[in-house]
Structures are given as C-alpha cells and as structure tokens.
Image 1 (cartoon, rainbow, N blue to C red):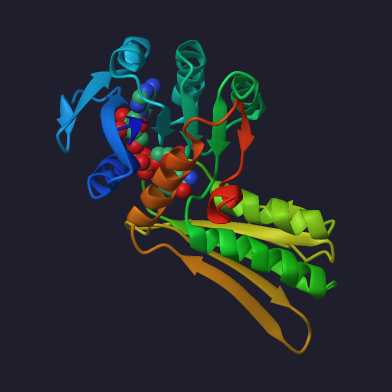
Image 2 (image 1 turned 180 degrees about the vertical axis):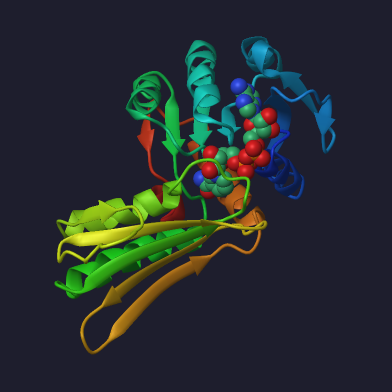
Length: 253
Ligand code: NAD
C-alpha cells in the first residue's frame, strides 16, 4: 500500500484526490497539507503548510501529490528533497525559475509533473501530433475553457497542446485578437474562456480551405484528474530520482 500525502488538501483538486483515494486499495492518503485553516478532509488529518517538513517526517509518505500554486510547489520541493519523498505535481503556471527548481529536485527524488492527468488528454496529445504532422499548411486555432476561479491563462494543458503542435510546425502563438488583426500563415491563436464551474475543455481546430478537423476534449468531473494523479503516485513510489512523464504511466512502462 503506497503512502501518499496531498499538498493543497483543502482545495478543489486536493479534496477530490482524497475522496478518490478512499475507494482504492493500492494506496492510502496519510496526511494533507494546506495553508487553509482546516483540521481534516475526508478523515485525513491536514497540517499547516509551515509544518510540511515535520509532517513528511511524521507520516512518512512515499509520494506527495500536489495541486496548489507554484510558490507552494517550489517550497514543497525543498521539503521533499530533504525527506526523500517523490513528487506528483499537478499545479500549473510555473515560471522558468519554478520549473528549474522542480528539475533540480529531480536529481534527488523522483518527480512526475503533468499539466493534465487525464488519460483522454494523453490520447488527444498523440492525436494532435499525428494530425498536425499530416495536415501541413492547415490553419490552427486553440481554445480552452475553465471555471471562473482559475488564475493562470492559458491553461497548462493548452500550453502542452501548443508545445505538441510546435514540435511538428513552426507556429507563433497569438493570445486573442482585437481590432485590425489579419491572420498570418504561421500563427496559432490561443483563446482562454472563464465561466461557471467548467472542469476543463480544450479544442484544436485544423482548417484547410475545403475541410475542418476539430480535436477536442472535455473533462466532466475533477475525479478524472485525481484518478490519473493517484495512478501516477502509485507508479512513482520507489522509483529512482529522475524526471518522469505521465505518458509512461498511461503506457504502463
Ligand atoms: P484551489 O484553489 O481549489 O486549491 C488550491 C489549494 O492550495 C487551496 O486549498 C489553497 O489553500 C492551497 N494552497 C495555497 N498555497 C498553499 C501553500 N503554500 N501550501 C499548501 N497549500 C496551499 O485550486 P484547484 O482547482 O484545486 O487547482 C490547483 C492547481 O491544480 C492549479 O494550478 C490548477 O491549474 C491545477 N490543476 C491541474 C490539473 C492536472 O490534471 N494537472 C487538473 C486540475 C487542476
């Protein structure tokens, strides 16, 4: 049974991870960490983020699942390196320094970071690679929609789709259009919508003059991300230090 800690335990994703883990027999959430003033979530004790080092020492998890904000993940990385605990990072919106801190942590502990822990999005990324490769010269446009509390834009998943496109085609992102804004051949517009409690929608349009291909994914429940993150935690536990990809979990490598 893999012992798991959850950073951001009181948040939307943290709570969903704890709920989802309750139905699993291969792992157990032993402690949560948050800055919010809560004692527990779903029967799991939650300690204050200022005590994260002591919590890792006391509860001895193999892996921490993190859905918080970049500053928190960066602080967590130090504590995980200190305690020799692996990291599954779902938080998005890192700047270069934050990303570099996580990469440095992976010299000491196993780190698996994904902007999207749904298996459907993994399949979408593979389809994007194939479609963009096959449809050279088609216009590309990317739209993502999320709930009205999301703070980073465009979404981490949209950035991953964009990077996947750019592996195949040299396109420049344009973030929205306004006024006189004729489309250039080598651009891809990226649009971010925020409304209601939408879990996450992504759509890539590939348009030639006589046909349109639309590749889209819609998450209907946060449980899909929680299940993927927990699969990643079970998969990561006991591995050597290093940087790992969610695609390897999906492929059962
Ligand atoms: P949320 O705001 O509901 O929850 C974040 C939690 O982190 C809150 O409880 C907050 O109190 C806590 N927190 C803030 N600072 C902290 C600190 N220093 N230490 C410990 N806890 C701290 O947000 P959410 O909707 O749960 O999303 C969290 C992150 O996960 C976002 O970056 C979001 O984009 C990302 N996300 C990723 C995936 C994925 O599949 N990778 C899926 C959904 C959301």
